[in-house]
Image (cartoon, rainbow, N blue to C red; front, side, top):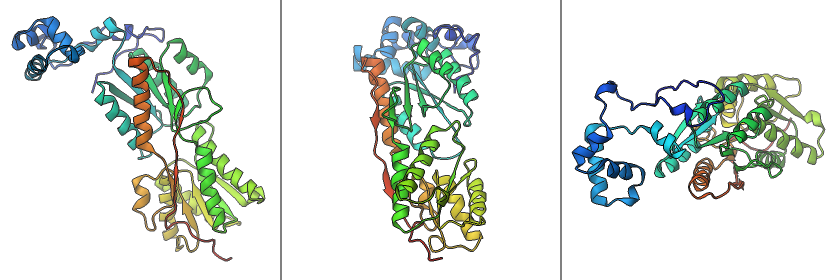
Length: 365
């Protein structure tokens, strides 16, 4: 993993941030050089540089000889110098809200795989759902010379958006899609997906529903899911008080605690919808502790369709998000922009309802 670079000031140019990058070895004095590679491969330094930067311009035999010398010597190119010369680092930055659960894992994995296939390096940061930390990470990634950024959701302060635009760093939004937004995104419509799931819950006869979700002040994806549930309740002609919303942090234990709270409320729900699968797993776990059967006594639903949703008993009814497709498409879009100048265009990917054992008919009360 690359060592931390000291960001001298927020006004640094994208190349200034790499002024002091050195090949990463334990002993800088004995670090193999470009000349060492050229000598071992019996080619010129220009051929080595061309082979590493533009391999399509050299013969297979020469490229293999150069790569063999690189591997033998343990040579690491000085990407700082390359960045200064080309104004490109072939590095993409991505900031995700958390690494503590699997919600973002599949998408980021597919994103990285696609980037790697095209010779790009991915730098990932986690904001812990803190807008101030995300802003700091955005500034840091840009200072380090990131060619582009992948961000989760639209919601951030205008000042940081202006900062990104002023530095002309291409930015793609994912895990969200809103046709009314001008920022390019490759994601899905959270509100529409959650509304469809709620309509299925209502078709099962449920009329008192609880929703366990995170705070929405800094999470527009959750805000859209809450709106989706509310819209379905309203369209069904039910009073607003037939939906109880409980806020909590994401986690299995917090989901369990929230489930217990809503089930001990005076207006006990027959269905508990969760804004992600992690919360839903906690809910199913707590239902068993409380002696409640799922879905006999209460139905539980999630969102995302991570693997964890399929190993509970019963398996959790949820919304399948196209995580890997989203990651691949996002990477391809950024590569096409950087290498061919193809403008970023928004893409609305389809979600799918996964109606499993945790959702059943409303019990007769």
